[in-house]
Length: 48
Image (tube, rainbow, N blue to C red; front, side, top):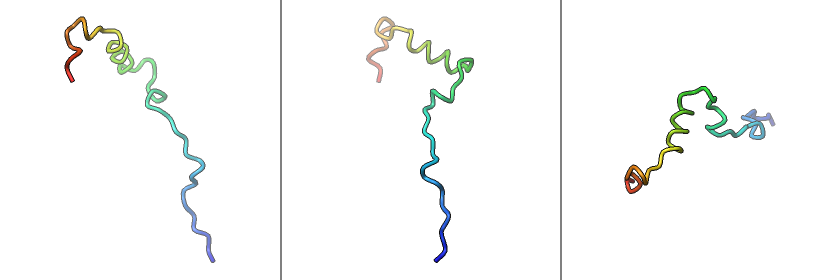
């Protein structure tokens, strides 16, 4: 009987999107801005 070669399931590494985005990426600025602004003060908290 021949061995069937498949993808090695034990070599998969999991990472998050945060691990892939560098500090100098413009997305980091947008993320920091969204965390900083006060949505309640701007009357935007009820928007869904």
